[in-house]
Image (cartoon, rainbow, N blue to C red; front, side):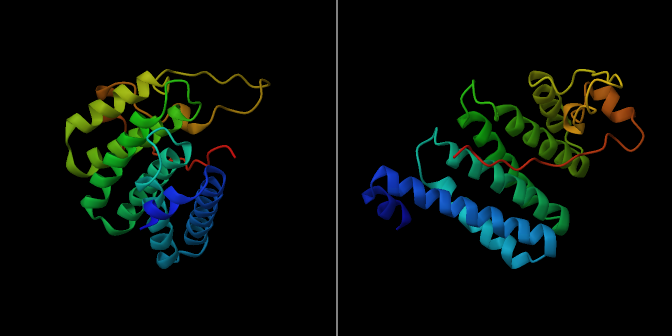
Length: 190
């Protein structure tokens, strides 16, 4: 039904509707993060699903919705332990990465988020293929390289720059594994 209604709208009005949905979903998800309101999280996920189901493959709001829905499912898994949420989060994360064009400045964020979700599934299932894919994603985005912070040259690099493991051995031998910094929500440019 929503696809039909949006199809008959002019592009300008359609864009305003999608922006309003995105803003509402983001506000609902922030409410969940702040207050722990599960109903707000479910409403946000419904809106992200609606946005992910419409629009063209390269639409930045559709890609952001895929990423944010993936992150919401990732977070829901950490609360419920339901592996189906994690599996769907990985499928959606891969879709966001595949849909983002090579020059997209947010592509590395989508790849990093997928890396974290794959690592989380590895921690719960022990499937080395997930860890290997996470390592490959980290290396391809530059997150796996070692960075050196020198005092006096601005703030320390964000944790997510170094949060994907560099090698399988490094990850498996680190005490407690590497710390996950979680996924990074994205709001596309207006």
